[in-house]
Length: 129
Image 1 (cartoon, rainbow, N blue to C red):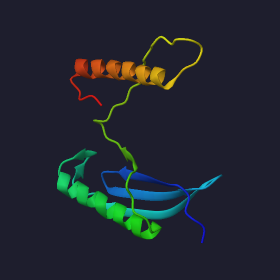
Image 2 (cartoon, rainbow, N blue to C red):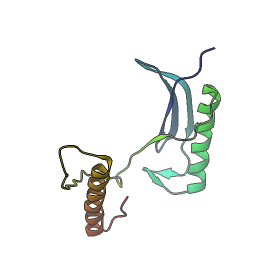
Image 3 (tube, helix red, strand yellow):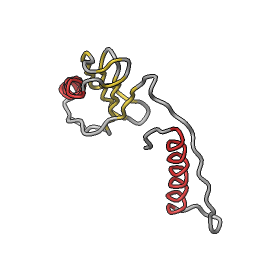
Image 4 (cartoon, rainbow, N blue to C red):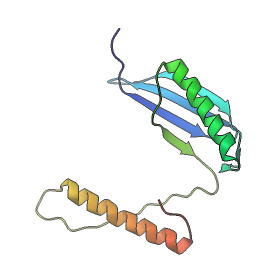
């Protein structure tokens, strides 16, 4: 049997159900090799009202996907929605020495963008990233 390709896992935390999907990354496609769903308990309109129940629902969906895929899940890409979730673009600008952008330039521009985000959140009274 050939070895497995890279695995990628998605987790959707919804008000009515938690869904977990495991995909095996192949050269030209992603094969779904595991799915787990469980009723969402502990959420109301996308807001966690009971953390213990929410965690238990997530664990059960993930466990079901692990069993189907025959793997252990250690990280996921998570989606959650609700009226309290907001997103925005932020910009960072830094000077670059020479003609080539290096990792330290990228690190500095990300930090500048985060500072812009923190400033925005402070003005709104939100919690920053």
